[in-house]
Length: 576
View 1 (cartoon, helix red, strand yellow):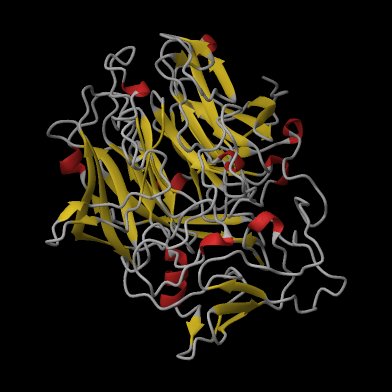
View 2 (spheres, rainbow, N blue to C red):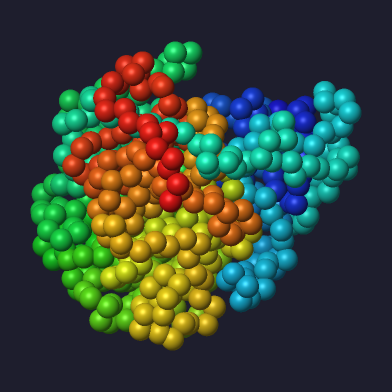
């Protein structure tokens, strides 16, 4: 790929691979996937720092096909150099920015209105494909696949790019196969990773960009690096647990009474910072901290507190951290605990409890005198910015205890597992095209699942896509991921989750925001604290009582280097 600056106020970008611009999303084909990111993004900067992207003094440069066509990668100077809200989402070409400029983008994203909440409000005018569309070869092309496409011009004021491709394709894959396989045909087994048996209460797993290694947090406060060697030809794995944790905050965590402890970890989009979420020993409040991270090492002296939230009770702490496809940090908080949400926090977006927050950890609010007022930035597209009806940080509200949520790597959809009160556990789906939850009210405490609880049903309530009762021993949902790995084609597109009290993994399939199919697989440990997603999309299961498992194709666990308790999903009919 090549991009260059042309005279005047416009930028011209050309690309020698097949290209498509379906519905406004920036895309470029690579050997294994399609990927997209915004200009001035942390990912772009990290690629520049590593020499993957080169830019000459005259503005010309080269980059591999994995760099998105259309992003003008100007030099930047440090983590805080990018314009405020440069990661604004959805990713449209309306806000291409010159990274050398500072301050608020001059041209806002047009028609960025609050999207419909499953039928209650209007859709944004823009209809977009997701930014992380992992579909090799899906691009439309001319009859000659080697032909150079027409240049795409983006003017300096952020106006709409124009191009003249011969049409585009919304085909889900190069061979025409559907993105979501038949769930009844899905088969997998679990392989217990013996090398990780010594971990105590593994509670969270994070992957680091560009590395196969895993980072696993113990509830007591330790975080470990696990080196992973995957022999793709034999499809075998080797794991090496470090001799000591890369970070130990067990003194700050103190105890794990109730639902307290180290609860979440995530890496920044450029991999240079590690975020941790835990409850403090002193008063049980929830805290999010950031640490500089380089070459597998955590700089403990760099510890910076981003957020502290008082907790009235020792349960419903939430604590999950996710870096969204927009580069922002999402943080889930429960309603504060206590039966029936006694303070009605769930329906009050003016409190941070009972919400999922969206923050910019690479920005900060500074007073004219240089004093840090708020140690994180507020994305300008957050739904309550400038609105007295809610806190600026709040992305969505009405959750009881969002115990694990994730973004689909392929579609950008947001999936949430929200723990119920006495009867109902729920899975919420916030589709990308509907704004993936912006300003959504998921209903608690007025609603438990789709049922009125302390009612009435709130206006604009976004109901769950799936719910299940406590019958049969269920008690507390553990949200998971949509499978987007490559080792188990039959599982592609299935959202996997579990329940803390009932052994087994469940799966559901959605299409156009609606439930299509469900299934209970006869495989899985009990006490599932979390699922984890490796950088290649393969999934892991973390059990408080029995360790860490890898989700494998049927018949591979016995051959794997990490031999363990392989159990298969095809032992029974698996119907729910």
